[in-house]
Image (cartoon, rainbow, N blue to C red; front, side):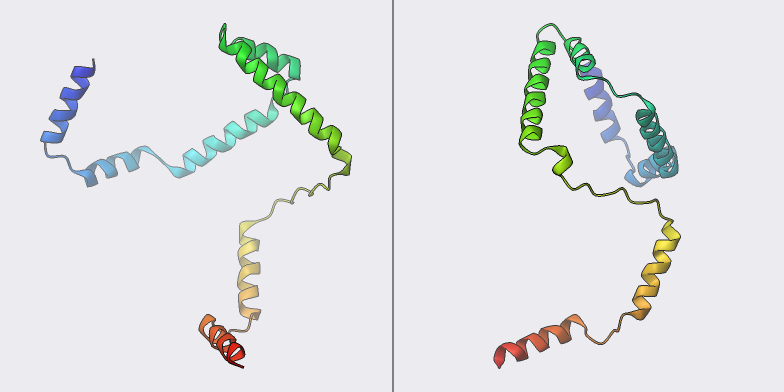
Amino acid sequence: LVKKIVLGAKIEFRSSYDPLEAHTRISKMYSWDRVASRTVKVYEKVLEKKSLTFLQRLARYKTVGSFSGYVVCLIAVSLHLLLNMIEWMQPRNQIDVVPDLERFDAGELLQLMNANRRETPIGNTAQEMRQQGSHKSAE
């Protein structure tokens, strides 16, 4: 199988390979809109799933393999104990939580940015600010 793949690669490179034509062909295969919509669907499916308990996750970790499953379980238990120790030292109710941002419209954001640009005085360019700084340091 490996010999056939190497032979095919040699034949492909010997022939007149046009990278631009290959790029054009591949660019027709993918659409970023479709990729983005598929990604959103995957995230939505993940968010719909119910969270597993720690014991349920350990049971799934054991199915990884006869030896490696137990290694993964040992790592998971170690991390669980570490996180519990950290939470004991710094309880969750004493941590300030940043509230979730509300969804915003990108068009509204652009309007705000453009309005802000119009209101900002253009007087001081970076070069003028450097010159002012050098005059102050000379004094």
